[in-house]
Length: 91
Image (cartoon, rainbow, N blue to C red):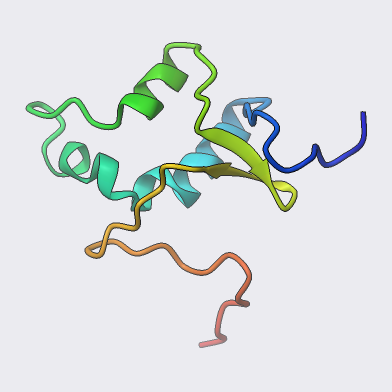
């Protein structure tokens, strides 16, 4: 198997650290999970993330350009994600 996997192949984090990085890159900035982040007691959140936490392989999580990617990601305007290809500005 070549590395990284081809675009479109299923992405499954290999460990908890990789899963946390993926979630911080996508889930924490996605409008699909925004209501859950605001009120965890009264909202179910993203069904894709919930299924992944239940041990299922989400079909929406695929490899793209050598990184895990969620095809259903929708940027939350209140909490936008930074561009992954832009170097952080020095302060």
